[in-house]
Every structure is written in C-alpha cells, then in structure tokens.
Length: 410
View 1 (spheres, rainbow, N blue to C red):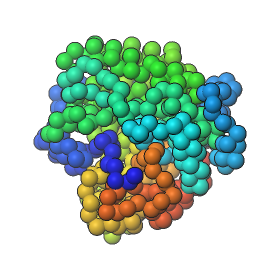
View 2: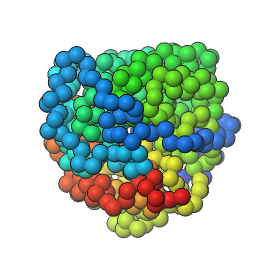
View 3: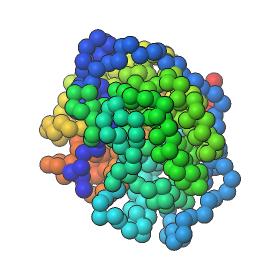
C-alpha cells in the first residue's frame, strides 16, 4: 500500500525571499506567490477545548449501529490528553479504496492504527481525507470516490475516542484535478466566491455533524487555502460550523503565509503546516536544524508561541531533504538519520517555544504501520517502520514538556 503518494502536503521548498518575488516550487507543483493578496491577521481568543479525552463536551457518544466498542477496551492511551497538555499526534490520511471496504475492516484498521500510535506514545490523532474540485476556478466542491462518508468517518473517530485519543477532523482539498504549473490548493480562484462557499458549506455540514456525534475535539475548517484567506465568506461558514459543532473550529495555514503576514481567519485556533527549508548538509547536527526553524519562526514573532500548533510537518528519509522537506516525490538515496534528526529538532522547537504540540505527516489509513516501507515504491516521507524515526517520535512524545497550558508560559 505504500506505493501511493498523497496529493496533499505540498509545500514551498525555496526560501521566502525568493517566494515574494518569483515563481517557486511548492513540493511537486510550481506555484506563484500571490503578492497582491491582502495581509491577513490572526484572530485568537480563549481556548474552547474541553478537558476530557472522551471528547469536547458531555459524556461518551454511542457508536454507530454495529460498532463493537468492546474490541477497543484493551486499547487505551497511557496519558489521555487534557486541556492545556501538549498534543502529540500523527496525521492519518484516509482515501477510500474503490473496493469499498466493509465497516468491520474500517473499524479493525482504525484499531490497528490506534495500537500503533499508543506504542509511539501519542495522545492525539488527526484524520485527514480528500474532497475535490473540477479546476482552480470552479465554484462547486464535491465528494469523490476516495472521500470517506460521514458515517464511516464517525466509526473511525469512535474507535480513537474510545481508546482515549484527542481527535481532529481535517478535510483537505485534493489537487489531482488542478493544472500543473499552478496546481496547488493555495492558488484556487473560484469564479464566484459566494457560490464556492455555499458549496463548501453543503459539503462540510454532514461531516460537522459526524464529528459532533463522535465527540471530536477539533474540526479544521480549511487547510492551506492561501488565496481565500481573508474572504468575508469565512465569517458565515465558521459561524455555521460553530453552531453545528461544539468542539474547537480551527484553520491550518501554510507556513509561507504564516511567517510573511497575518492570517485573516475568523477562528480562535490556528495550526501551521510547517515545512521550513533549512540550508544545511545531511550531516548537520540537530542544533543547526533547530536554529534554522527558529530563524523562520522569528520572522513572525520571537519567544514563546503558546497559541500555535504544528498541525502538520514531516520530511523525507533521504539525502538532501533539509533543503525541501515537503518534496515527497523525490526518491534520492535513503537516509533515515536525516528524518530522525529533523523530528528531534522539531520536537525541541515545540518544547522550547511552548507550542501546543505537533502532528507528524503521515500514515495512510489503508497501510499496515507495522510493516517497513518499500523504499522502491513508498514515499520517503513515510516514517512508520523506520526504527530511527520511530525512536525519535517516541522520545519526543515521552518528553517532560507538559504543554502550553500547564504553567510553562504566560
């Protein structure tokens, strides 16, 4: 299953100074910086998270009909997440297989991943899944053959919730139908934005309800939609989401927009998809990688960042990856230490800057996380089955850092 390469996690791989003036490569897609867009702002407020690992409010939701919760009893996070704790998590990317797997298979696969994540020491999981658009100017968003249904999503969320995980739901715009050369979700330009937002609301509504029924903690209202940030349509959409879903509604910004200005989104919670290029050799020590990350983050703000979550980050286990950490199509010589040291550095930055936590990209839902990746076909970004990377993640998740809301920051 590791031969699949995801069509998300496409990130700028050149330095931002070049980004501001010239075309640049965003992972596998050449992308142009929208220099004429309005500078955004970060809208923050009091944390809306609840403190129970069972969900965001109330008691435990009942599983969908036929969901055997007893099979999850043996699966339990050692230290379930509570409000103020660090989120130590993984992005689980789910594309439905066209064979239409049975509900039993889906639930068992979720338990397999829950067991693996418990072994890593994770307390959080984010379920990302694709939705689709015909082209960059289309006004209509659709589910596709690879989009899990709300009902099946709820089944998976229930498994993780019952095991004590903090859960996030993260629909993300697939890029497969976008033209090469400008084919990044951050550059879409709907012909009629009001129609686009109406279509997006229609698509999201049943997933918001499924997330509410499963007592998910967070619903990500948008991911890496640079060109649409600041649009008035978000106000109505976020208001609708907050009425439908009682957990936190967040937005995940791409790292380039985050460091270059303010993110104008009417949400109280902000995640960063962080793939900062660091121009160092493969032999660089962790300290140089930490310095590289801090140099980028300091463009935005120095010191602690207690309101910021690293919602997605990763890097290929290969030579040269530090220069382009989000380039998942490259297949240079495998170098597991590059990936492991990157994880160590990111974890250190999260701790030292008192951030909310980190989610590693990624594991495919259909894969067996206990099977080493086939380096002839698998994405270099795969970490499951790479001992050095898994050890780095375990060490990170077992750190003494309690989290931004435990008295470590103001």
